[in-house]
Image 1 (tube, rainbow, N blue to C red):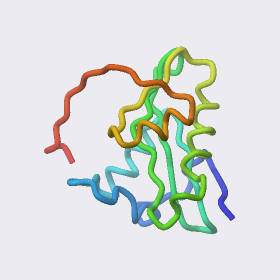
Image 2: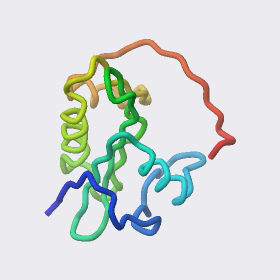
Image 3: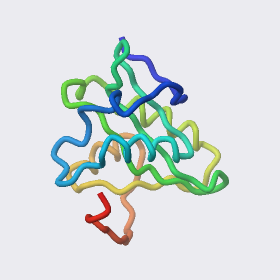
Image 4: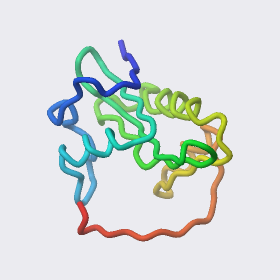
Length: 130
């Protein structure tokens, strides 16, 4: 059974193993935990005591938000966990004007099924930072 929580009480670096598969330079467990603690909102998915997925949101808390990470461990993908994480984080921002995220092209259909629309954007990437 998958449970969902918004609090990070007791979450440790060791709880965050198994994420960022395929990333050329994944964040360290310490960076990962710091990002979650620094986020406006976080939803964690657990299977018993194991963290199997998470989504985080950064925001001004008034009108705009950005979802930088949605991750589900590979062995738990295809079970609707990512969709439920997105549903819950979107509910946290229902009062906001915009919620944006950046994704690879092959993930666009997934986010479109969740009601998101394609936008044009720009950004900087400093791959040496992680």
